[in-house]
Image 1 (cartoon, rainbow, N blue to C red):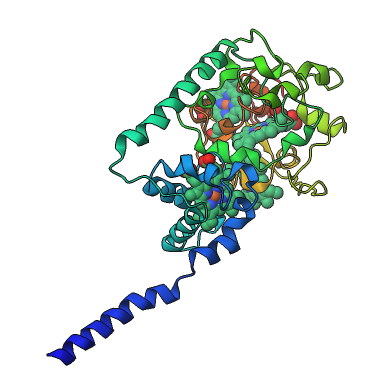
Image 2: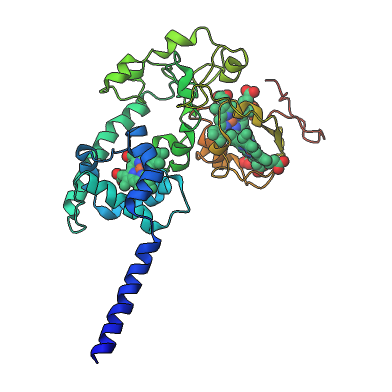
Length: 342
Ligand code: HEC
Ligand code: HEC
Ligand code: HEC
Ligand code: HEC
């Protein structure tokens, strides 16, 4: 029976070896995909070989890190590093590789209490901010060209979707806060409830009012008409955060959505959006790119979905009915005095 034992051993050995051979190593995956960000710490990513960056994350446990790498995080880690075709095992191998590079050992799953601590601390840190945000009520929208307008650069398009798709009902951004009456708008960054007052960078930002004076006015949000500001070339937002020469792909295509009842129809203009935003901000995560293929309602918009992913947060709020409901109905069977003035 020695022979058969040996055969079993060989077969078993082959079975183990095969998948290993077919799979890219963690290092390969890291080099090809993850290094784009994790080599330099781009966008706040933990850096290769940096124990200080990886230590606190490893404390969450390996399963949690795998999860982040596979499905992405709201703070900018794209699912599988943006390469959805990578097998899960290779993504995990790359995580293992980065942890090993930093000489960090992930916490064991049994270490539940340890896992809880950082979470609670985080929650506490967030609470006061939330309160402040409520108090500050409807201040400046962190508009596309973001409050600190000296560098309208901040309008960099790719920033929107990450936050946008991850908004949950518990998030301060999930409600159209600009529907609330405005008490104070355009407060300086350390007081606006959006920027972290403990961060030195916040204090270095130009206060919005110091920059907004020269811009065309709007009746809502942070009182700036950003579409006109671009039209009049008063601002020149950088289209790509990393590439100052990148030009937007502007698409001039209006989509008319007929509205039942008396409200004028909605005209969705691609032009004004694509001057700011890359197609990937909306397609396919928020809208299937096909006229009429998406069920949109005011309720969903108010809940921060569909158009409400941006409108009421970084673009004009829902209170400006006629900005969207701009097309008078052809058949005047339900006449309303609302003219499409805009
Ligand atoms: C486009 C930039 C980018 C690429 C590419 C990228 N990451 Fe990340 N990664 C980030 C950022 C930003 C963070 C920090 C996000 C956070 O704190 O939630 C991060 C965090 C992580 C974390 C820690 C998550 C946590 O819960 O603390 C892991 C693990 C990770 N990345 C793995 C990978 C792997 C594996 C790859 C390659 C397959 C990869 N990343 C590719 C940007 C990137
Ligand atoms: C701000 C969000 C947004 C951005 C950015 C955006 N779109 Fe759209 N797109 C929409 C909406 C909303 C619709 C209509 C969907 C519906 O009617 O259900 C649409 C529809 C479309 C359609 C279908 C047209 C038809 O007649 O069926 C195409 C094609 C399209 N978009 C391409 C693009 C391209 C290309 C870009 C980038 C240059 C882009 N979109 C950028 C929101 C966006
Ligand atoms: C990804 C973010 C995003 C989504 C989703 C989005 N918008 Fe916008 N929208 C903007 C930004 C940014 C502006 C320009 C800033 C502003 O006007 O506040 C804008 C401007 C507009 C304008 C003003 C055009 C003008 O000439 O003044 C209209 C109308 C509009 N959006 C309608 C819609 C409708 C309808 C939807 C849903 C079908 C929608 N938007 C979805 C971000 C978005
Ligand atoms: C950001 C753009 C936007 C703004 C601002 C907006 N709407 Fe709408 N509204 C829409 C879209 C998109 C639909 C869906 C149209 C469809 O059925 O395809 C809609 C639908 C409606 C409907 C039809 C029923 C429903 O819930 O779908 C009513 C009524 C309506 N809106 C009223 C209003 C009123 C009143 C305001 C101002 C307080 C307003 N809307 C502001 C985009 C907007």
